[in-house]
Structure formats: C-alpha cells, structure tokens
Length: 194
Image (cartoon, rainbow, N blue to C red; front, side, top):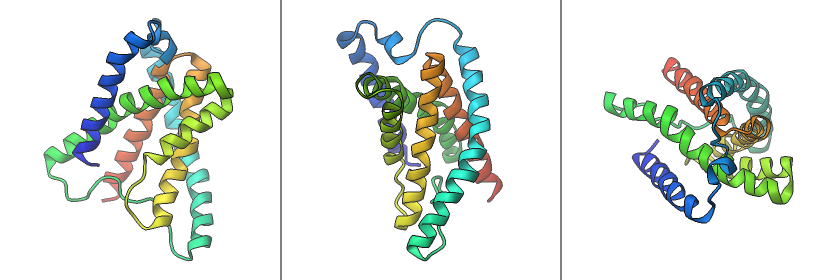
C-alpha cells in the first residue's frame, strides 16, 4: 500500500464522476448505481465475497501457486501488500483505503465503466474476463516474478466474479460489497499472521 494509491483512486473516481454526466446523461443506470436497495445489494455482495474468498484463495491460488512453483523451481507465495512496519496512523489509513476507497474506486471503474462497455461489445463472459484481466494487472506488486504473477493471476478470476454480481443483480453496490468482504478478510488474515 502506498499513499499514492489512495490519491490516485480518489482522483480517477472524481474525474469519472465529473465527466460521466457530461458524456453520458444516463450514467448512473449505466454503471449500476440505480435507485433501489443499495444496502441490500451491498450486504448480498458482502456475503458473496465472504463465500467466494476461501474458494478463490484455496482452489485458485493454490492451483496457480503449484503451477508457478513447478515453472520457477522455487516456493511461490503472494507478495506482501501491506508493509509490516507501519505506525498506527499508517495502519488506520490502510484500513480506510482497503474497506472504503479501493472497493468504491476500483469497482466504479472496472465493473461500472469498463465491464459494461466490454460486455456491450464482446458479450457477458468476454467482457467479464477483460475487466478481470485489467483488474489483475493493476495488482502488480514488486516482488520475485512468480510471486507477482501469482497475485495478479488470482485477481483475474476475482475480477470476473466481481463482474458477475452487477451482471446478475444490475447493481454496482453488490460488487462493492464483495470487494469490501475480500479486503476485510485479507486484512484480518494479514494482521492475524503477524
């Protein structure tokens, strides 16, 4: 986590929020911010994310880790995404970023803007894969190549799963809730292991 990540995410989301009303008058519906039950969609997404996390962490990450270990000849694990030596204010900023800023900013772009555009041109699953691939690529963390590839590769099916939620529910709030669940579980595991 870098402070620049939070600043970048807030800036990009701000630009999108200012530009979309000009370029696309029906943008709220197009990105899945429809009127209705945002809280219900957030909760449903959170539950989906909490159930999907162990599946992706155990099945997908373990399988990919074994493949990358076979290729590299070395032990492979996901790189540290949160520095261990943060002061309390740093930990608080990481928590705010992980459970508020990143889920809103990343879901707004990847599942609110990119996925609907790709889906309209390519179809549901190719669009979901494209948004998942882009989502995976932004999760690059400087680390040994196999560790970095493992993290990015695990984020691709995670992004596809996050795209399935607005495709099914018609609401971006569900994918935001799932993203929050992933980040909460991830932070709990990171800090429990230290």
